[in-house]
Image 1 (cartoon, one colour):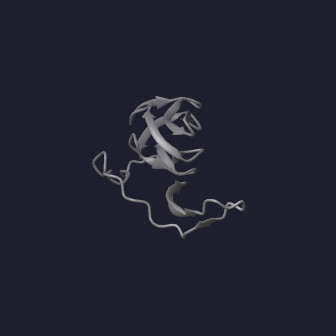
Image 2 (cartoon, rainbow, N blue to C red):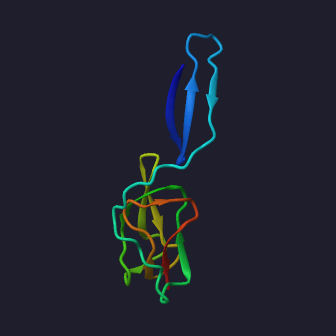
Length: 122
């Protein structure tokens, strides 16, 4: 039998694979907490009181690859605000309507879930 540790969607599993049988029996242990990664940036402060009312949200889970717009930048509907990397693809997260960037709520390298607020607009 061989033991493996695998990570699926951030959940860590210990898996035991029995070798030498035709059935290929696989037993999985209950998930355990994923190890904490070393912080790569200073902790982010909560969005300021001036945060906008229009949310720019992630369409898919992934990692923040690039921030395209800064606070105070005017954007048009469809302009990229943040680029998220998911499944080795760079996916632009665009402004849902015209406005001015009020807050950027993520940093490059942050892991984000689908639906997470990445930025806000006024």
